[in-house]
Length: 308
Image (cartoon, rainbow, N blue to C red; front, side, top):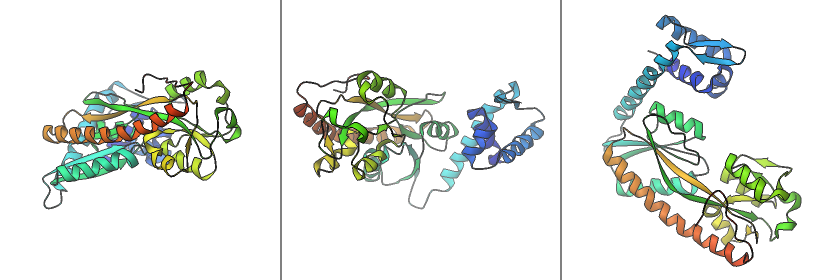
């Protein structure tokens, strides 16, 4: 069966919409409709009930979904195994949120290459929902993400709490940020905690959903924003960013999500190396938090849990 039809079916099933599926697949809505029609003709059953509100799977669609996932998974396993370069015996495909590649993902790749030289590694980039879909389809075996979405056949391991700290491109106090403050959207829990803790910064003129990449915007334009402590440590060291005294900090958990059927040897050794890399980065983060404590003797607020 055509993998393109299967992936289109799974995309519509995931989004509940032909329109949203077409946007994710970078094709027209009519192309999505045609593919689903071809699939339905082959199976002899309607897979979706169409309406103005979207597309809902029929009973046949729900039954077919697990077969579609299995077929995609088998194909991905075959593709990865047959495609192994000479000299490599096993493979691992890793996906990660774009904010987690620079400071964590790349270091993990270095560690894996050093400890498992016969392991062929492929790296992917994606937002949380796409990473989970890649996992369920077998396109990747592990994902680094801030927002795990557990599904059947997946297991999550909490690595640490990333700490979000308020940093500014120029030395500034809490009351001096004004229009220089940029709101970086780190998800619903952060939005709620930010609203409660910092009502005076509740309606900034600019919001970014760019994760740690927002640091480049903040540095280059004299702005201030909440950013990951470990990510911005080099900028703090070279003076291009400055911690804002008295600002609360927000812990933000990092997770690794694994397929349950991953090779046990790869899983054990890869997880051990990931934990080791994370431990080294935690030391860097600790230095930033200690600096923040020293300049904020009167206020050391933490929300969303305990950042340590």
